[in-house]
Image 1 (cartoon, rainbow, N blue to C red):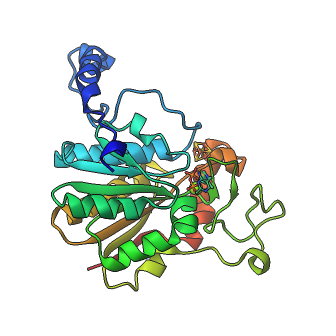
Image 2: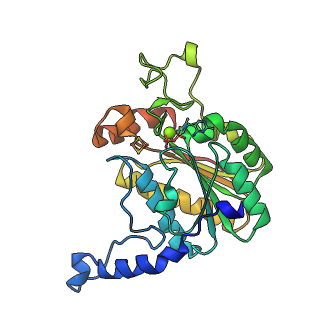
Length: 274
Ligand SMILES: Cc1ncc(C[n+]2csc(CCOP(=O)(O)OP(=O)(O)O)c2C)c(N)n1
Ligand code: SF4
Ligand SMILES: [Mg+2]
């Protein structure tokens, strides 16, 4: 475990120096700064496609960590999927887990280091397919960890295959005529499934399909971290996220699809809070 934890703090001094030089024009002209890169987000060019939701979600997590001033305490567990190299973008400690095993690894870290703030970042292939057992049991044990679940309805990294979350009728590279409920079964509503488990304290579904929804997503992520800081138990936020590349859409069409289609099946809002 120790070996796998990637220490990124050493890069901080260099990043900070660069950030100081690269001030936005408004700040250079003496106006007050109203928007800047969170300290926890490294100054790195990311590999995500145009219009992808992962970058937005990374930023929301980093803003939350900065606002709680917990960068030295946070340990993330990164997934397999398009976010596999999230550690290149986050300037805090990150461990990497095998596909779907993220909640199990997070459990081990949190139990050994209860003073740290531990969160997993998982796609829907990771969490809702190969990792179904891990998420169910971590939630049922009421582990005091936070889970950020990125539901883009496909296996993005490997070419857009059907995920358990793929909507009925949705075309993917493995359901070229659309997902058939008879052949492939029903899309899984993971939060609703986990809500019946007594160990689960907080579940909310949000999206990053508009500025307004992104602000709500930030509030939910912040609440989930807050609960862990207060030792309240298992918290999880599902984020409906755009994958324009695998959906064969422009970024704007992909955002509209979340508003008009995806969120009608996966309703936004608090699913459980206690
Ligand atoms: C044990 C294992 N099985 C399968 C794979 C291949 N694999 C890599 S990423 C991926 C799907 C990722 O999809 P998702 O978790 O939804 O993330 P996204 O890329 O959509 O963000 C799969 C099946 C793997 N790396 N390891
Ligand atoms: S394939 Fe989809 S999830 Fe992966 S980076 Fe591109 S838009 Fe994002
Ligand atoms: Mg996915």
